[in-house]
Amino acid sequence: MSKKDRRSYIDAVYCLQKKPSLIDEKIVPGAKTLFDTFTTLHINQTHTIHNNFSFLMWHRFFTYVYEKVLREQCGFEGTHPYWEWGYDVDDPESSPILDGSDYSLGSNGVPLKDKNETWILWPPPPFKPTKDLISEFPAGTGGGCVHTGPFSDMTVNFGPISQGSERHLDRMFQYRPHCLKRDINPHIGQHYLAFNWTIWNIVESTDMMGFQARITGDRRQGHGDYKLNKFGAHGAGHYFGGGPTGAFSDLYASPQDPLFFPHHAQIDRMWAIWQWLDIENRKDALYGTLTYENLPPSRKGTLDDLVDLRPIIDPVRIRDVVDVISGPFCYFYE
Image 1 (tube, rainbow, N blue to C red):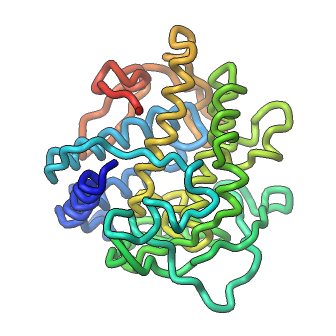
Image 2 (cartoon, rainbow, N blue to C red; image 1 turned 30 degrees about the vertical axis):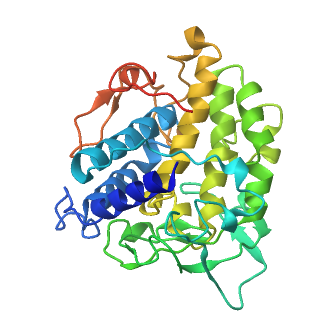
């Protein structure tokens, strides 16, 4: 994107953060703005839109609707960006998206003093933090508030709910204003988001089960891949930018960080590329049930199930959002 287009996108996101919420604050106290409305929907549906059959479709439509609202409510006229992480994994703080310039999405967080050298990551709810599910990584390079560039002045209204080793499910919708934090982690980027990993995810997957399991880091990956790819590109992107302190790595409230939508546009791009390699067999391919790794047990998802983003937009069927050139869509990735 040109600097002009990047600035136009940033200004539109700021505009969204000034529009009133579509959700009654008496019901969801943290939903102060239209930007927060998107986060509210994500929080409310977390366990039925991750590591399940609708993960890719739900987030494709979610990202599309976000762009649609940026256009209709805030006058955005450009194309929505995707974040090709492979360019940034070695030196993320010098990348156009994170260098803290006026045309970026803000900087890293302020480095924390006396920070542990190791980051301990618990598995997401409903899994218990047992020894085999707890991960340890070298700490990131930030951890505090975003300190320069766009969104360094942003107020985050939800959370933290579930990030790092914190669990606060009792305050899911509470109003808890604080700064936008990030803890950029090059270690995770280099190990899970380099070009060879995204290419592997696409070419190694011959069916939807394999593709979706690899991109999400699902424990049900075959051939022992989980030990090498326990986050998948999806989870790794969130942890690469958010770390243990950032809103971006909060399973529930991650749309609060503006990095969320370029990240998910890249996930959608990977899916679109994979589909077009065998469009006849992959366009309508589904895998999984209604719930997160089938916990609790639920039926298999179908093309007639719904993606429901009310009150922003009317529900659509899964079959309407599996193809980027039909249904409500008409786009390609450059």
